[in-house]
Length: 192
Image 1 (cartoon, one colour):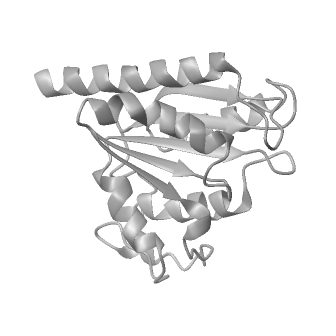
Image 2 (image 1 turned 180 degrees about the vertical axis):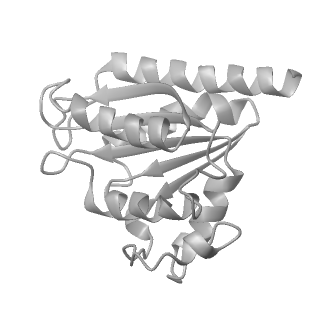
Image 3 (image 1 turned 120 degrees about the vertical axis):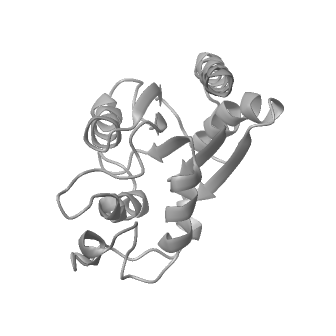
């Protein structure tokens, strides 16, 4: 299994990054291929609505930036773990720009290509009490799962987080179980 984790936070060692690391650890131990992409490190432009991608036979975008490499990574992944902090009541701006560029995964008839069946894990962190921003997690699950046809495996929400504070151990236990679930899914797929 190839698992791509997307850190939508500017903090490479923050709470979301720690959860991603915990999810990926069982997979890495099971010799699954894992990678973390820090969106804030990428130079990504917004979608220009030129519809180049709707005329292209394969996933392609006229905007030549860091997204070209990310398209290949997304297509190669069997599972995608998307993590975001809550900023002003929603996902981080760079993560939104990144997800807007997934428009290229829709063909000219708006059929989803290259994403259906990929496993999805959503991670949302915030300083507000746990559950306050469940709508952000539902948004990501609905957009990436229902609309783009990925298969939701889990949603991990962590609230009450302050800079320098610690994650609730229960959140890390859940992240570890999610990682173990991805390994089991991988083993079942290999056995099919």
